Length: 564
Image (spheres, rainbow, N blue to C red):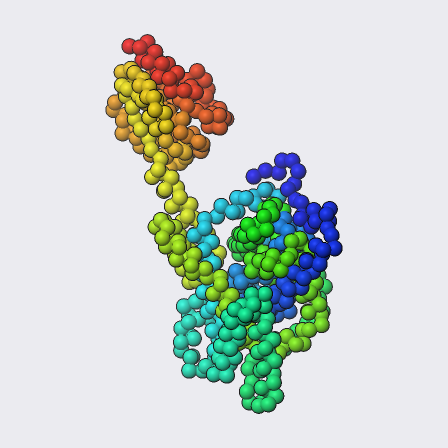
């Protein structure tokens, strides 16, 4: 983490115009129009599922999509609202209202910008895969559970937010199923599923919305008793003009309370956008600037809430649609935003006619695609620690919330990783004889004679707080056999942390008090720099830090002989 030198911010859009052509624009135009059409039903559905109006979902897709393409570090990334944010957005609105969501989104944008400025784009990619799969599958199940009311036409107006209570209410009210609404939902679902079998280029969600909306409108005109709830019935008059940017009041109390949610939005946005960018790079052969991508995502999330929008991130499905239709530059993403803008300005009255059960079908398919059940099944063949991380993250996401799930999931993954490192790290004790080639690929073995009164302790693995404690316990258990010299062999120590340095300092001081010399062997340059910075070289004596075990043994044998 550093800010030394030039800030790593170079939007891909600036690179494009150096060699842009009319043929490239034609391909980007086609891809942008197709992606805009595909993004329309998703933006509406994600907006409604998040607890805001369809117009806010569209505004988010328009402004966020433009910002991500204009300032991002990936050539084909399509930004907008995604299903991953539904759970946390709905939770923030329930507790803090829409203003709280706007503040949390703005704070998340600032966090993303800082992650990019501090060049942490590559570090975010190292979040354990079971954590990502666990909360993604949990989000998918939660999204699915939120659509039962609209899909079955239960007509419930006060559904609990927590998963268990929600399903309890559903089961208690399944006698209220509206068969006509359920039929509309099932037909919508079938159209979405079957459309790709006809042509993968056809957007199943949009085809379903157009066909079902037209059919239900015609049926309602023939028989007024056959009514199904529509977007217009639920949201009444929706805005058809882009809102002017506006501010909102900030105070430290609300900032402190929203900080965990803002951090979750930022981490989720970073993970999803960089995952999408990585998938896109694998298909197109391009290379994403991760830090620029985070800054671009951050800028989008700073600007969008000023217009009343919800969080933005890179969307894998829309990005892949862009690629398969020929999009190769950020111009396609900008065109996709302009297509949505034209729809917002001129076709919003038609959107009022879309049945809610049809949108529920769209989100049920989204949740199925998000679930990644094949990936989950694959992880169940992995080590048990990965399975535990997956299950804990999944259950916490479903039963509690995403913020707790990510925090506990990451903590559990770190603890299990450290445990695995400790299990594969070792401390060996030698006396009388030492095979220099032991633990290497060398075929020729050199056995060193270790004088009486000299003990060799070899640390195999990172010398961090866990191993430091293990080493300290070993030293205490051998205190009764007091040697004249202790050699600490560190050829296999790639790094050392402050706890290990502290324990080493205590060992050196206690050994000196008992007239026992300490010799360090095989110290690499990085570890030596840490030891020198902490003053260990002065404490042990610079001459007692050797670069090879042969020198260390010779020195220790001489010290032992002189002391005798």
